[in-house]
Amino acid sequence: MSRRRKALAVLFLISIPFLVSMSFEGYTYRYGLQYVGFPSYYVRGSGIACPGIFRAYYQLEEGDGVKFFSTYFPPENDSERFNDPNVVILEFSKNAQSKEFTKAGDFSILFLSRDESDEFLDTHYRLKAIYKGETLRWISFNITHSINYDPDNSSVCVDYANSYRVYEIEATRCWQVLIGWLKPILRWYLRAHLGDVPKPYHW
Image (cartoon, rainbow, N blue to C red; front, side, top):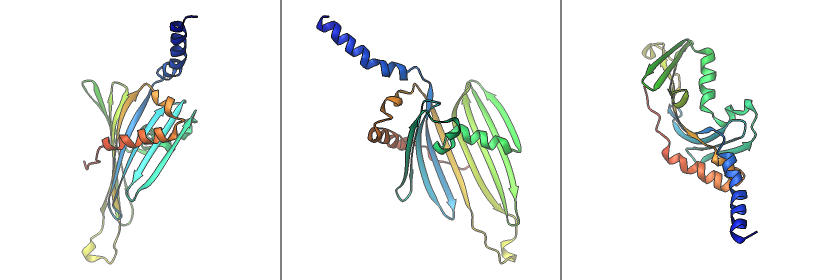
C-alpha cells in the first residue's frame, strides 16, 4: 500500500468517531436563575443533552459554588439532575391550572400558569416556552409572591424570594460526545458558554 493510501486509511479511521457522533441529534442549553428577595443571588448553568448517549452540565453560583458532572448512556429518568429544560415543562404541565398555546409564523408559544395560597402568601407560577417548529428554543419560568394580609395591622413578618429563570436552547449534532471523556476540556467548554447566559427578567 502506498503512503498516500495509508494516510487516507488512517484519516478515515480517525474520522469514524466524529462521523458517528455527528449522526446523533441533541441540544445545548444555557441557564440563568435569579432570586430576588431574601436571600438574593444569581446562578448560571450550561448543559449538553444527547438523549440516550451523553449528558453534561456545569453550574456556577454566586460565591463560586460549582457543580459539574457528565455521563455516557444516561438513564431516561436522569434528566432532572442535569437541569434539562424539557423536564421543567413536563413537571409544570402536570399541575398547571391553565394552558394556552398560540402560533406566530414559524414559532409556537406555550403559556402555563398556577396559583397557590396559604395563610400569608399568594404564590404565582408562570411559564412561557417558545418552539420553532417542534424544537424547543426558549423558556422563561417565574415564581413570584404577594402577601395576602395587611402588614400595617399585623405582627407577622414573612420573608420570601421571587425567582426568575430562563433557558436558551440550540440544536447540536452531538460532536461533544468526542470530548466527554476529557473532563478538563469538557469543563472548559461548558464554562465558556456561561458568558452567553441570558439574564432572567420579570414579566
